[in-house]
Image (tube, rainbow, N blue to C red; front, side, top):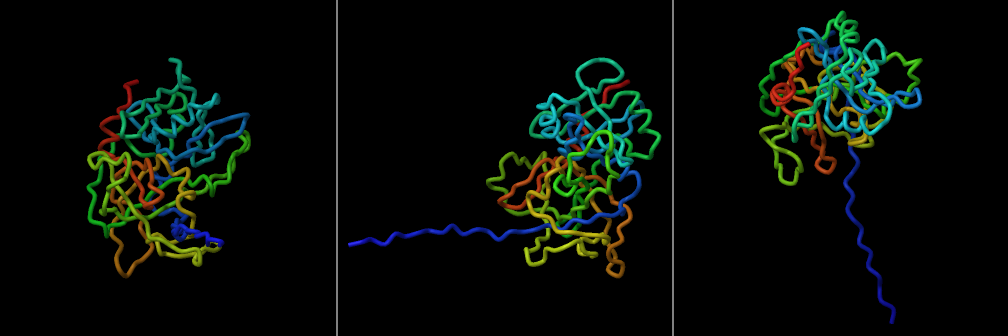
Length: 291
């Protein structure tokens, strides 16, 4: 007598997408300071993550995620930083000359890194308006307050690029989110004294389509839906900003953020949560050297 073979199908969670927007909403200095961090191999620039430039009294530094720097160090090529004007900066750590860069990694679990740019590069960059170091952390608020992750999605950038013909870089991507205050059991590497958690508004595949104009994310401009988590690749090391409240009669026009709150350093794909290191932790553990 034949026995029936039972097949158990695992319930698969529906695919979800997160909306991001492209435009210029948050102030010139913030956009000038937001850069792409990657590596240069065989004359090709490969983007890995996002960084943010700050001007100190004597140098320019780049703050990013430590795991982005570690990934870049696994390559034999130099670290590359692409600025908003499409300039490619080559970073050669390891020696003490003026053309070298000092790189420091914060102790875990901060997952933050500081790249102190060479003096020659610092001089040319500091002519443009960029953010000043140090910056105080803005106090976080209840979940209804909107935050913005500002960085570059690798999948949307469509790299690598030739180091000799870098494309005109587009504005960074804005991912708006709210602070997550739910259960945290099973979130590996999460420490409440070091990290903040953020969540998104989710969209289904039926809503996905070509780029559309919309104001669903409180910013307006050109927006698109990207897959989570793959669409977030390249956002590691980006800054998280607290946005000023939007008046009910004036949607989609946030001009200035209220302040910086964190550095995006991880995500939890199964629970669809973003992890970010508190900015107070980043700025206290990473201090530029006097030069």
